[in-house]
Image (cartoon, rainbow, N blue to C red; front, side):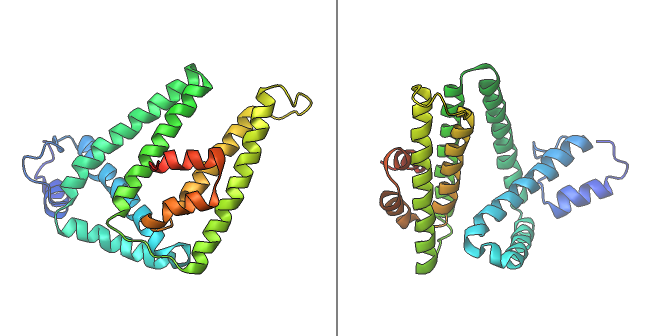
Length: 231
């Protein structure tokens, strides 16, 4: 390392972030260490705190959520968790970039079916990972909010079934007079699944599968069960 007295470098990475002296994450190059020792772990930690605290506080308590996020960040620094987060976060970031590259290649050079397949696989994996994370943070929801979520889920189910049926009719040549891009219908179906996932993840774990069985039907229900790993 060639940073003069190293005072600023040592103060940031060893005194504040509490990296051990011989950590493989830092190699002495300022640009490398700033990205992989400071920026990427901070991004991963902020994203984790934001999405894990979202179901607890909601949009109406955004100020409290930001305050708790700041407290969580400071606790992670004080207890010396940052090097652990850096090691896991850098690996996770590389995997995300790899999946993104794979998705781009499939979308650019291969069939639409391959794109849908990889997209569903990533969505299912993300859903299972979110379940594992949320097991440590129990979710509570009022009866009124639960009924509202179930009502929105039924609306998404109806829209998905109608859109999926229209797409199938177009593919079978039964609606030649209708000038609709099939890709827009596919995107609409994907949007329904994404929105349904957001709604379902606001429910406690024990209520998610019953909500899917109660409020969805047919292919939409099958997609959601596959997404959350239910049979």
